[in-house]
Image (cartoon, rainbow, N blue to C red; front, side, top):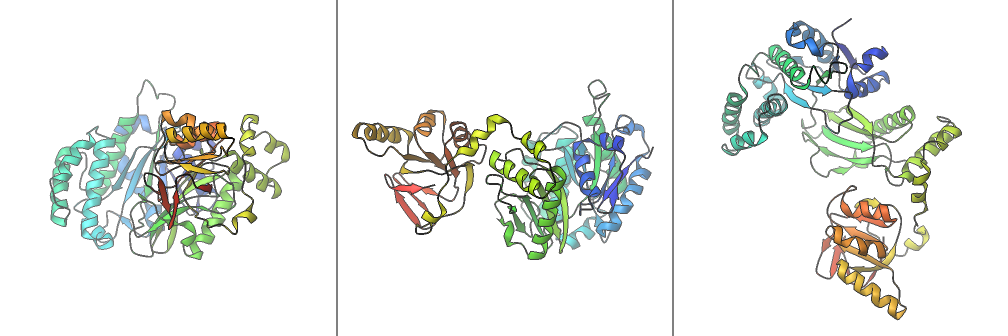
Length: 466
């Protein structure tokens, strides 16, 4: 049995037993590779090796595994002028939102100058500090606060980051992060395996390790980082839904709409999205990096937060294309979820003459018309008065965020607009449970008795359609 299993756009093993021993994250990588999609290359050290990794002669194994990664990415691990860096991911069979990962392995004083020529000296030292931080917290149980304390001591300059790295290395221990890149990778793999393998709990199902090349979205304006869903997760409209940022390391803030990407990349992402929907018969979430005009896929996964409408529309599109059968589609939507399809909608023709502001996040699907009020108490007061006087009782709550005491107002109102949180925050969750409409609009400014958005001002008591 081989000790490692490579994956790349060129393919991967088809052995089902190996897939089983590769954990959830490893299986996702194999899935992309098996479809011939541009997954960042890597290899899996499967779970059969994990229990004995501490005593294994790992250096020749990882050396051999790195060869294919070097060839495809075009950098060499440990090279002083053009070094390849890798990350190591713990891949268990548990479904986790984030799998423990150590980044920037292969970066050390030996390779620093070469990496700095690629990314800039300041950024290179910052990434070395990040290697030390992730290794320290993920492997050696050092509290993140201790790294924060060290980082605060030094200025955000090249010399400051050098000093910061030196102190962090002292905290982690030089033996735990060797300067020699191959030795560094072997030590990290062994210690990760030891850290996340419990002989009593994991004897039948230990985690695998993934060694994967690193590509960068911050190498200039022809590089980017992004994430998208294969279609709109609320309406099910068959258009990519996501964002990206140019020339950044990671997507930490709101980026540009995915449709602002160059058409070359956008067309490729559409083809990838379509292929994944047909393969998995559902909406998928995909993370990608563009490094110097080359598109790479990092990961793909299911979308748990999709609406019933979006899921059903996806299934019907797949049925129309002959990908699935009608009998199978019928069994995919639990009967209890069908009620969500009965939410009201706006007649598009009535919107043509009205000023419209698009944007925000759909917290709960549907449409509503009503007068806006800015507190639950005020909305309840107006609602009682409207009932007594026989006036219009359609009201909409507008708040920064909702809380337990606001539930009654959401229940009697037509909908709620908030400017904090996301799809899983309080207002959307309560709205979905009550069959109400919810929008989260972070760009909205809320005053004591008015809102401002998109150059429009709406005062308390005035009508809006949401």
